[in-house]
Length: 67
Image 1 (spheres, rainbow, N blue to C red):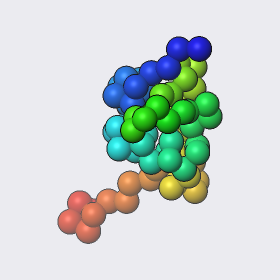
Image 2: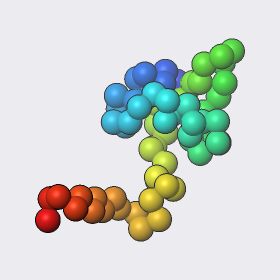
Image 3: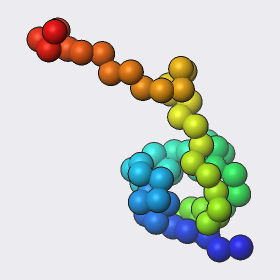
């Protein structure tokens, strides 16, 4: 099985490297392994759903001065 670095995975998924570190630490990336002080993420791993957003989509509310 081929593993990708956090930087490679960040480019592929379109999120920050720090967010991927958090997801790996929480055990939300299936198959991710710790190699010393870095994470190895399986090449075929899929981006986990964002649990911070309950509805499944982000809805940006307009600021008061944009109305």
